[in-house]
Image (cartoon, rainbow, N blue to C red):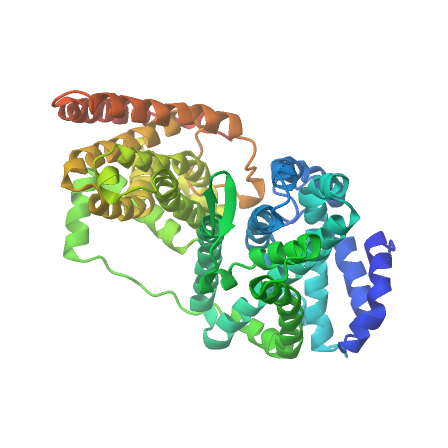
Length: 547
């Protein structure tokens, strides 16, 4: 087997691993095997854009990092903007944490929670602590490539602009952040594994990943709002809750080192930035036997609970779907959306973002009194919730149980229209409508009942936008393809074009608010073009199906 350069670099820290009770030689050999196997297969966690037929995984992984290099370029202004290091580096580390933790949640959790090694390694005389540390190092190797791609160019710019001390402090901070993110994620899963098991545990892990994704976005907003701009200068009012925004720990560290600002606030955060990652690693090493033992719970599948719909649910279904075939596909699609874990893990964070983004725009757009907000047209920011619709419609064709799609061909399906219309309706009522209702309640509280007709129009436009997206995107049988074939970047140009429809809807909506009774005229028009498009969109034949 090949002796990888990353393993040779890891040899420098051999004594450190031994001090923590890790059998370094065995860990190194396991890592060598894992890295070799990574080169023979193309797992999703290492490259979403790679295809199964391609063998050179490492090259594909490196090629896929260009998008993170691009994101890194957008962080350069925070390095160049001045010498208020607490402010600018806190923002820099906040953005860096957002990308790293998002990647950790979406890509590397499957490695951390992998139980396939148990059958091979556990019967052997291998210490459980060594196996657990191998998983962490395996993740960190690939996370290091991601880190270099994301922060490499900004760090070089910082070296040129602020000197070697700034560069060295940034490198140390980024290493500590990476370690803290990996171990923090592992400890969260350890806590969940301790108290739950089987199918319920898998669902909880799913939801924790989703909550973490949303928490990152909300945390970034809190980070920005920790600072106030006064006469083009930046001030910080220390608050107790800022202790939990760990990118500020490293901003404070930079402030102490570069500006010599040794206030108690800065020293406390600097101390937290150094001690917390080290403490979390020590805790994880101590608890890793329990972690590995509780991982066995993931192999228990349990029994699925049968849920019967009540009379109200059946009555609503009769109204939503007109034919028996459409109702059958509505139930089927609803069941898949609720029970398909891979689907939920990819879709639910996006739904959360679509719920948070309109609120963030309102928060950032209005720092004045409430009366000015309530009389404005800022409720139109609810249209930002529509941007997730094309992404989810693309994901509707993927499933972890795609091999069962043969049933579509052998079933006595006379027309494809009920299949597609039922699936789209299931998406709207099971996924988009809860998000929209959540936003509607908040917007009604902020703007009053005067916007109720506007909210009805937005929902009608959302349904119309879903139909337009269906008409433009490639047609595929719902839940009939593997997630391994999902290429997130292949439809970017189409998505950008579809966003023009959202802008058009919002622009027309704003224009109607300028005239008396214009909003009610727009309501009638919205109903008419939704009904017309719905009749035309689903006349699909098998020949038009993609693949």
